[in-house]
Length: 254
Image (tube, rainbow, N blue to C red; front, side):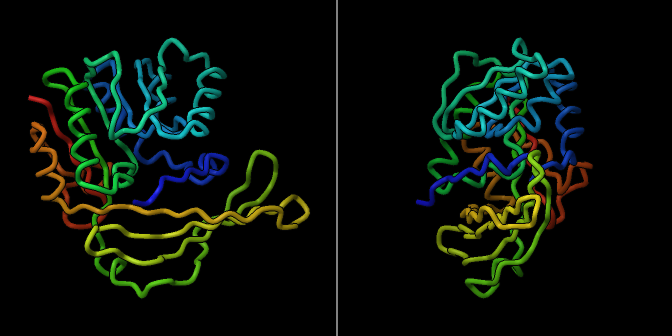
């Protein structure tokens, strides 16, 4: 089974998009506290929700990601609203089990590579929600053109960004192959870090494997553990799913 590999030192600079913050804030205002975020990482969503006054519990598998999140929590004096736990989202148990809202954002659910782990994760989320509580999970819509690419493609520059220390980073991606049987897309990210004089000081290649799911497959998984699916969106503007973009499932524990 593929292993999860983090890249906390680049994550915030590489993922500075706020496109989904308003979406989750809207559901937070609708549902109220407490809120559970699985795969919370460095706190990209935890922090703005806590700053808006919500009590947020974050779970993540990476201690280095959580360390960054803890530092942000301390800097912003949010310790009374944020609770962080190191755990696998496929096998976690929190003392608090009365959440009004839970979510797995930005395709993180796709790092569960077996249906057994997917169902285990969904069951634990269901068990931690109060009756009537909401759950949101976001995965990408499988794109057949991408999945049919020739294997071992070349690295392509995706973005460039600067680190707080002034170093410049070029991020490149490449498609490795598609495991059709297990529905796992294998890709790689390469980070080339240059110092302020333009000298390459570090190069790191990170495997990025994701297990894709189709719309009705995801609905069946949710239904299997007792969720009622309310909406399926294609984007954070809540446009209905049309086979493209994201598959953002909004479900409720009856």
